[in-house]
Image (cartoon, rainbow, N blue to C red):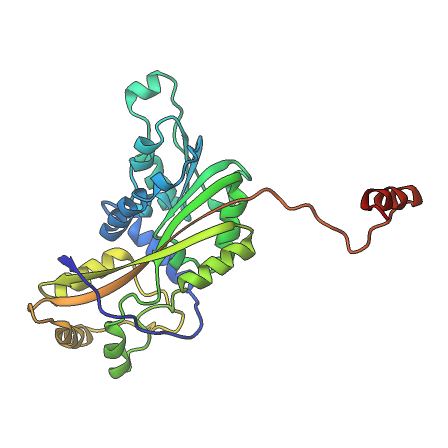
Length: 306
């Protein structure tokens, strides 16, 4: 597999929905993998390259979907003095995060406690100074609710940094699935501008969004399908939900041959969206009606020179 420049933008429209049952099923499968998905590890490294633009040195870090996020000990090395906590969707993933982040024996001798790994709804409110969420937002069945959960977990002036797939991902597969009447290849992922708007609605300030386009190539269809399976699976509610047979797989492999470029390799493109934003101080609520005493009105008039 190798990477090279990607094709131009492919417009999409339609409901941006994710099947929650499919998310849980794929999470159970990926929790049994030897390591985090290969792409997530790469994107985690690219996210980390953006951290120096943030001057705040967080003392409490919360990794959201930590095991599948693929950051490993990257944030521990970046913020060695920070308290590290982890939020995981399922019990299987919590077990993997607990094992992956267990202190070494010499750290335990010095009194270092076991890693704190919790379900998202058990995360402390207003504690984290950094919420790190790599390659998980596009798999959220309720994106606005996830953004709100990050906002709730953050302390005032803390920040979130995240990445996810954008709507121009795997666009080369869409004509094939449409031509063969195979249903959708995946959800219609959120556009980065819409995510930025949703962040403002969730209470974040100054969201900064950008994206990278990545082109991946493979020597053959079997390698392509193997890598895609390692990333998860089709989360679209309108996908074909029956069992595919061996004949269908052979037909798919044949159709994938149309993706070969001039170099003889199969090509797929990804759009990866990156974002960060801060949690501002709460605004003072102003009531619809205000009452002033006569003395207060006189004082205001004197100050205005009337």
